[in-house]
Amino acid sequence: MNTLKRLKIKDWALEDRPREKLLAQGPRSLSDAELIAILIGSGNQEETAVELSRRILGDVNNNLNDLSRKGIDYLQTFNGIGEAKAVSIAAALELGKRRKSAEVFLKKKITCSKDAADFFTPLLGDLNHEEFWVMLLDRGNKITDHYKISQGGISGTVIDVRIILKKALEKLAVSLILCHNHPSGTMEASDADLKITRKIKQSAEVMDISVLDHIIIGQNRYLSLADEGLLH
Image (cartoon, rainbow, N blue to C red):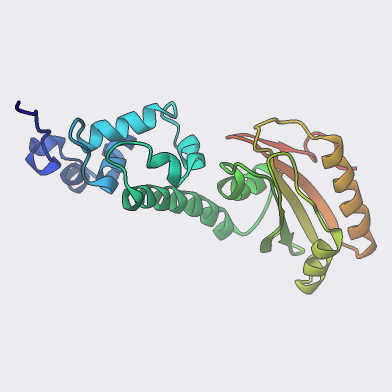
């Protein structure tokens, strides 16, 4: 019995080859599936690289952020995606997140809650567990440092106020912005969120350090306690 053999990318019509299309028309001309097809190079016996990439994206409703949340093991459940290809996709998604974060950091200055959210979203937006981060600012609201305070499970994390203040004092920070994520995507500040914010704010004031905001990152959304009048 003869088995239908799928064409390799190099056997496609020139205008259908994603690599050649990128070289001729630039990366913006390619769909997300075509870009992923370039990363994986080949599909399987039933699907071309582009067809396989479309199926992977279709499984997450064509949402790259959701794909980034899935991880290596999920990618390897697709026929034709081994560890090496899965790692290539994960690395590309991570580079995209870091580029967005770097763009905000190059601006250096935080002028509103959106600036802070844009900085932290690539770091926290697609995590399946909760993390708590702090951004340090100088007198001109320029970013001097940022760091993770703690990492927890799906529903919470433990924050040590002493660690936050120690690092802020070492860096001579004038103000700071708190940030953590809600893996569930819920955009509401819990009683625990408000309590730890007040505790950090009151402790920082003793050291003449201002807490400018506490940003909660969800899935493609954020909540600013300062904007909501909850920073007190």
